[in-house]
Image (cartoon, rainbow, N blue to C red):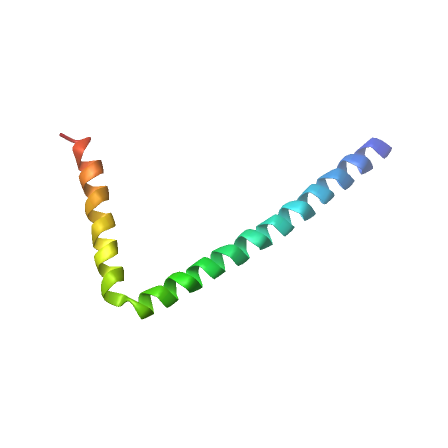
Amino acid sequence: MEKKFEDLAAKAKKLAEDSEELKVVREMAEDLAENASDFVRKYPIQSVLGAAAVGFLLASLLGRGRR
């Protein structure tokens, strides 16, 4: 019975650690999204051209596999 409680305590500790790591990752993602949004507002033309270039490159790379 004591072994089960130890296992549950270890699992609870692991979940708490994972939860903290998840919070850090979420905060980093929110900061990245905010920075990207600010960049697009500041440089809208460059953002559209950059997105078009990335889309063209991806289409070119993925399209070659179909030939």
